[in-house]
Amino acid sequence: MTKTLIFIALLLSLLYFRTFTWLINVWLTDPYYSHGFLIPIISGAIAWIIIRKHNKESEFEPEPFKHGIFIFAFGLLLYTVGYIKLFPFLSALSFLFTASGLILYFYGKPLMRSFLFPVSFLIFAIPLPLSILKKVTFVLQSFSVRYSTSIIELVGIPVERIGAEIHLQNAAFIIGLPCSGMNTLISLLAMAAILIYVLRCHTSKKAVLFCAAVPIAIGANIFRIVAILLVANTYGAEAAMKFFHTFSSPFLIITAFIFLILVSITIGCKVKR
Image 1 (cartoon, rainbow, N blue to C red):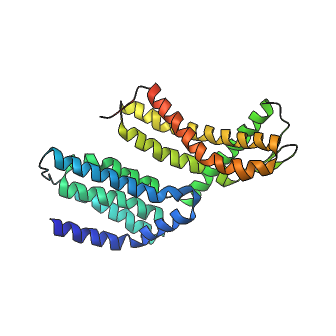
Image 2: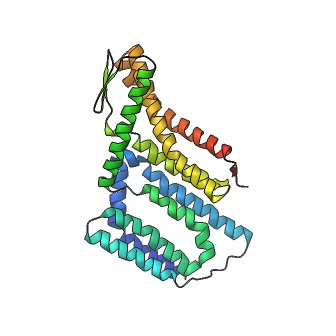
Image 3: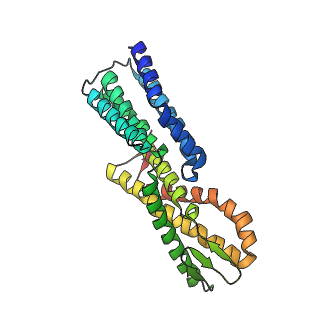
């Protein structure tokens, strides 16, 4: 069986070579998916831990599930459609089905249940289609500009909003698509998935926690824009952009993740032992 698996792995590597090349290129060039390299590393680490756990607990006996071949075939179908239609997202997505089908076919349902998270987690490394990404980013941009401007008005600072531009008395900012919060949202959803995996609570609570990542990410980005505007109003646009703009990005992710942890504690989730 080992030789068969090595042969299949080599065939899949050749088959998905163009898809993997596309993914690496996107990870290197698209700021929304610069975290892409981390996803397969994290997924592989979790899979390795699962394998070690299985080996320690008992002598693992494969329980092949022959119907897994249909999931594998469905994955190949998706890949073929993506290849013909020049739709790399579909080709990349198909890998999740081909990998799952192979695990089921050779090792059975018990191991597939254990590998469900590391395989599914790979979806965070697959860039959304550009048309969908642009629409979501534009909505987030409009939302962030509107509400950050409203907050600045509430604290009594004169401000004017013109489209994606925010004008203060001594400075003006264009809230571009990279500042829409999309990067934060994608990263926080991936972090939420990991957090859910290590927590022990009811599935409904896990769903609430995952969904909570969306308003937390949006709120954190609005807070970041407001903070930059406040710094600009007090110390000038140069101080806001040169120092605070750079410093606020990692601080934003850390703060958002802390809020996510607080939500998990509030709803009664605990770390698995």
